Image 1 (tube, rainbow, N blue to C red):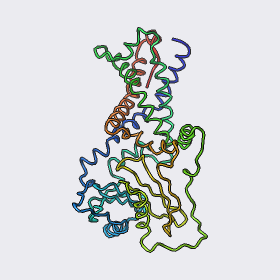
Image 2 (spheres, rainbow, N blue to C red; image 1 turned 120 degrees about the vertical axis):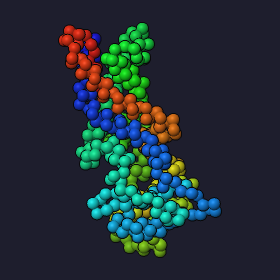
Image 3 (cartoon, rainbow, N blue to C red; image 1 turned 90 degrees about the horizontal axis):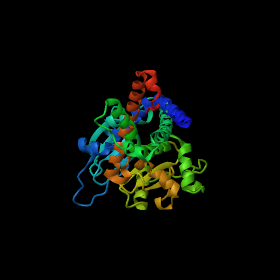
Image 4 (cartoon, rainbow, N blue to C red; image 1 turned 90 degrees about the vertical axis):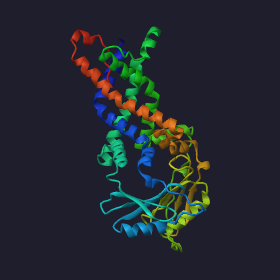
Length: 381
């Protein structure tokens, strides 16, 4: 073995041992979360509603908010998700401790269909585990981010170690010898499956890093735009607190909603923010498709007057911003529909297996005589 490969092998080994547990948790929870919408639709009947035979508009946010306030007076409204014409509308609220709740309502009748404590919701817990390991966000997010960065290095060094030196070795390197001893099968599961899943795993890792680190997102934005910057699409407007304004004649959330419906009539899903402070603009998003987050028109409104401060239609965005918008759909695979989700699921599952098979390889080598151990490649995770 060359000195270069020995160094790469040691780096691969110790980085893998140090980050393996976090990579396993993040990958496994990612695999589970991939099909969360499909599983929720199959197990939570309140997510779907019957569309009226006669064309009927959705109830305005103020009406849905009043119904929720009557049923749950202790909770403070945070934002709405109008999920689509055949889906319930969800009002997210918080309690005094800052814990989130979700109230699903029929957007045509206002009937409350479900009320969830998101602190106890299975997929909310899986998401928190995936992103923060159930730790405080500042700590957990950093631990996960560093582990994913290490995982990217692991994928690259793993390919270097796997790459066959001779053409005659390539067929053996691409197949798993199921009839061999368990150590050989474990080695093949680690190296062969790792090679096949490397591209998908790398894509999942990089899109995850775009969510974790601003510098990664900015770098992708910079490269995608060939070095050009478009500050107008990235900078939110400010609220002039010195200017006297007149409050809207109707509830301000209704005012936002009606303007969005006029400006983005084809939108199937709407994120409707609510004023949090008279000094901050209210951010809203209109999505072209329900449960897809790529094609989006963005709006900023005045928190008191309801005036439209800024609109960023999807068509006007730069390539870098469009890539940032599609990042979540890339990360979950849903940008390619069901096939993409299956690929993301399998890639996440293989990624979760790599720390396990890598650890077993390292542990097995420790149990062997020194002479035999010295002849093997030091590879883990």
